[in-house]
Amino acid sequence: MSTMADVNLDSAELKARVDRFQQCHADITRQVRRVIVGQDEVLDQILIALFVGGHCLITGLPGTAKTLMVRTIATTLGLEFKRIQFTPDLMPTDITGTDIIEEDPATGHRTWTFVPGPIFGNILLADEINRTPPKTQSALLEAMQERSCTVRGNHYNLPAPFFVLATQNPIELEGTYPLPEAQLDRFLFNTVLDYLSADEEMAVIGLTTTTHEAALDVVTNAAEISSFQQLVRMVPIADSVARYAISLVRATRFSTAEAPAIVKKYVNYGASVRAAQFLVLAAKARALTRQRYHVTYEDITALAIPVLRHRLLLNFHAESERLTSDALLRQLLEQLPPPKA
Image (cartoon, rainbow, N blue to C red; front, side):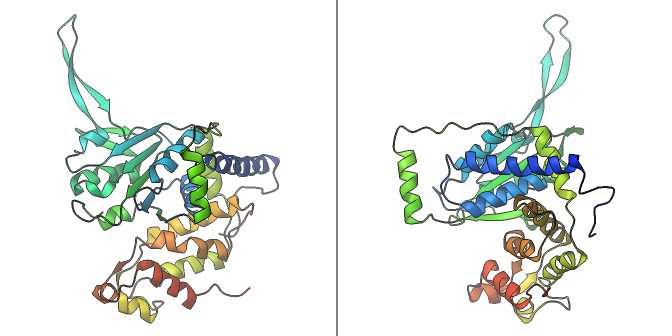
């Protein structure tokens, strides 16, 4: 695992691809900064998810620029952007598309014609995904996992890359449907948007209450993004670092020997194997964005909380003591620090 198979790190072609990746990442960040103030960690996680080929759940209070950030990123990436406003009356076919009967005026012959839904884009913003019933939420499952959808028995492949950014409001519970664990597990990150600092809010006022309009440049395209996703998978990771990532994930399961006392006391269900896969892939992308060609322990610890926070199911003891997943994971990282070099 510590070396790349059939890849020469010193090759000029590979070096050019890595240089282009890092330049593109810097250019995307620069363009987004013309519109979005602050939220550095959030932007970093969204771009990592994009370069990995995963999906991102964005949790934030109203007015924290969730939708604006997604639309801005889509514009500067040069990708096809689609948006779905999830509501209680939304049906699965409103997402995937449906077949309609069309009649040929000349012959009178009728045929079924498939009309693609908004899911057929590169970046899909699923706005307030927890406001729609589970039947419609589940319509995203096949698309997120298989990059395809099935309508009336017909199989349709989605365009590549395909990237779902779903938002949810954490404070409104009435009229919402919590996402099932199976769907939560398909999100690489659960990214949390918090309030900005006073200086950052002053900068927002300066950008949005005047006649200023930011002009965004297109930095890349769909084919190049797909190439970056393959490049990320080529980043080497040492066995010791990969084992540390696995040990963190296994420690979230109360039934394993690695689980500390806090997990045994407060966790009903821990993270799945998919969490370990996502943690390693995200760490590889983070290493490249930091201009490194290998994964470090710091990459793992920096991404552990956003990768794992939505994969833990806490019990009533944690609820009664108001212990959150983030607080538990921070304690877990303190109790299981990376091994010393």
